[in-house]
Image (cartoon, rainbow, N blue to C red):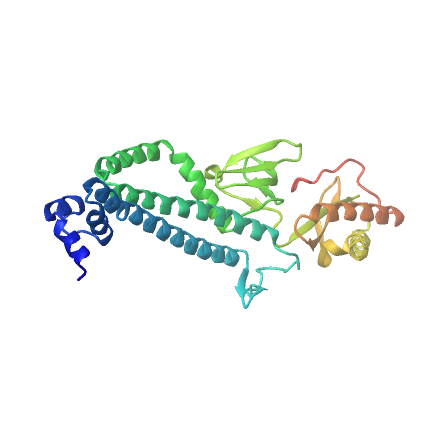
Length: 335
């Protein structure tokens, strides 16, 4: 060993070294104490290589776990939207639709997946951040017992006070997951009926026929009647005079409906063929003949209007009389 190193090690005070660097000194602390002989500087170096390094490791691990969780949530969202990554390309889900495939991109599924994944990412990041903060406080030497106990008491108090809010969030989450409705759908939520303008985890906003905007908490929704999912049906009852030739009237109505289905403005919205169901009502004031046809969701009201105009003109051209008094059909409200 070199003479100058031997003399340096001889000057090292074992008691001071133990005081500065504990019973098992680290290499950095021991090296600083051996070079400087300063207990304070050695203690600082020992703390610097212990606590900040552990905090750095905690933050790094939390970041990695968060990235992995976000990646898993993103894949989960792709499956909700009916898509999945495979070989760098996106493929549609092979599952067949329950009724009819409209051939359109399901934008509602994509929006639903984006909402759900956004919430899951926020919740996951929050939990990971809380656990990382708890570990960091432990590394800094803080007593976490009273803090955790106090947080538990506050959490219980908030839980009792925010039961309705939690119910709204849970209901909204499952409604999005199960695709009860989406933006643009015409729905019946009980007291409120209209077109959905916004869907969040807490509240659903829709606008009715009169332009009134309704904000409905998701926890208050007990049933949903969706008039815009998968396919719809245009159903109208045509009133004619009770003394008219009903067979001829039914034939004229059927021909008029077929003419509507063949029109260019109706072709993108109609599915299948229309059908005349026959006499729906027969009385001294009028006889009603029901005609119906399957349409794309949301197009039933426009197709119904086209049917009424075409059928009225066809009946007038054939000289089939209408009821002498106004006849109002009780049925689904018009859009």
